[in-house]
Image (cartoon, rainbow, N blue to C red):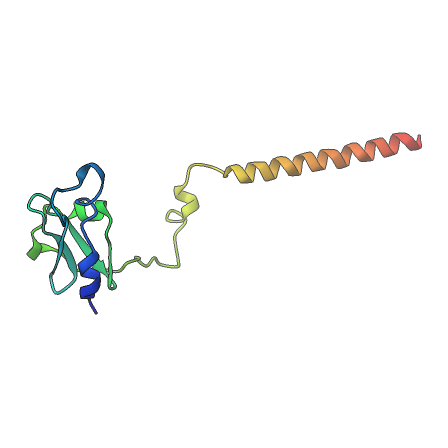
Length: 134
């Protein structure tokens, strides 16, 4: 399955239709299906952005289209999967915790602080209760 004609009629190159980079004319940023319906190519003469269609979903991100600007249409690769699969068995060097040097999130710190306060309140209550008996 490829992009339907109805969808193709409304899709436009996001770079050519937005903000300061908007092209002039009545209908800027028209796209054309290329490479057996696996790529959308902007038809603006000075744009050259190309958007992959992954698993029948056009990836219409300006950064994605910009990556392929200098690639000739005939040299465009297979678009690949929308979400790349990762192996379930990760080495410790590949785990998210091993690559993150940020430390605990603020919520973890708040939770730890609340636990410390609660412990101090319990200890304080025990001392007050003990002193009342004496």
